[in-house]
Length: 193
Image (cartoon, rainbow, N blue to C red):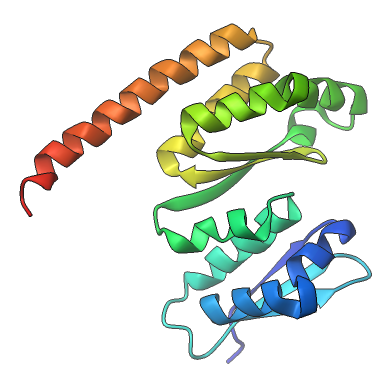
């Protein structure tokens, strides 16, 4: 029986980051997720094969997310956030899916998402507590489902042309809602200890 596997293609310039110094990042992914990574340096292909000793088949999907996140511009430390907490997810917005191959539109929207000196991206990160990376033709997001959802909505608003202050107001409202939900959960379940 064939071992479960997945295939991811990452930009060639990100292969060195995926492998890491002396292969450390690649080895960490393989050990923590019980997978084997076969990296094709020439074209950026990465075959991910689940080990027979893997305790959970879903580790293959986590490995795919970690490799893709590194390929989409995240540092290994931020990509490993996916491993540290089971509630953490990775998602990305492909600007080519929205604008096709129009490099000028993609460049303009990337500028709106990043903002002057990175202010907009930083504000999205601060208000959602998600990690946000704009790389190539994608916007990558790592955080809890709620954090990523709020950040994705903010990115979508910027893509659709919303003014920055409108997006910031949306994020501040969303942050208050999330904090209120956290407090209610803490009040409900915190007393049970």
